[in-house]
Image (cartoon, rainbow, N blue to C red; front, side):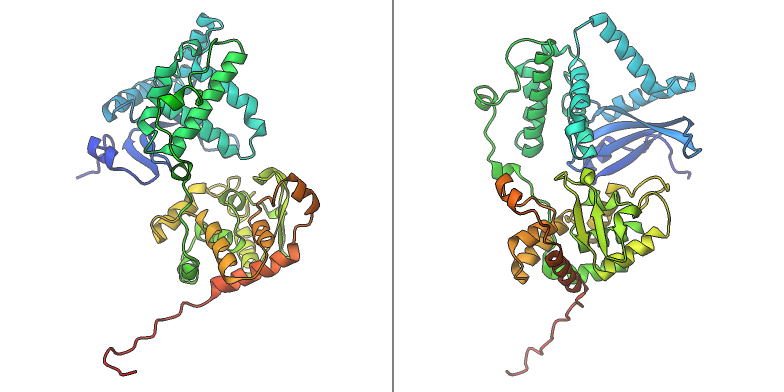
Length: 415
């Protein structure tokens, strides 16, 4: 029997999906599961030719969150988009044009979505990580669906509570960020003259009386980390894996670098003769240039990966694209359930604290953390590079350490 190409998902399967990724229903409709577990509908389609690659230009169009649209409703919405394509119309352009007409009819009566987009546009230049823009947009699209098309002047406390209450205790950190983002958008709208009155998303003296207070320790979610005693075994298994994601993950572990820093690395950032990787300030969370000492194995990984050519050391499917940030995550989860790539920075830091005598500042600088407050930073202008080089060399040797087999002693053997 031929494999069914459409309506592959069932309502039960949709509820059961937990692993982040895209799950096809067929004919361009996908269920998207984010890293935080939120679910939404995506319609993928191709239209026109990408002049850079010569291949069909790919588009993704959000069709709404699962908690707003059921599987059946998502299929209806996807069908409507396919009909537009059949008539030669780009669904995204059609949606934006219709939205523009509504705005023109409303005059200065802007919607919450309009104000959110304007806020992001105004502030994205001050955000260090491009993913921050995506997170802002995705969060508001997912949880504010009930009022994002409403005039911003009409958004009130019940609307804000409708977005927050379903996730306030189950996803406390996400809910806290969502509240703050709604508050900022509404504040921008007020200052811009699109609404009046108090901000319904404000916390003190308002929502703190309507929602239970969540302790900070419950809101903060630390990245799951592998115990450092297991890193040797893990590295042996990792080196047996083929492919760019495995080499990128190994390089990330050896350098204790962030995932975004690794996948965004370009050949020009490396001086392999000097065994140094210099990450420019614009790619760093701290907005400061960071020099990373490379072990012999890290140098070898860069040399080998660079042979593939392309704009990035760890290239993606196309020469002009970096490796997807999901590639290392999926590999790590396959090898060790529950562990994420960022957690290896914690593995390194715990090892450095418990197994070495290096000062705290050396270990923190190895992670590209800012040391102390502004006054302390003004005096501590060096980067402790040579000490960090010795620290990272020791870390590489520790990662190379062979796994020790346990000694088996017969239970009846006398002492």
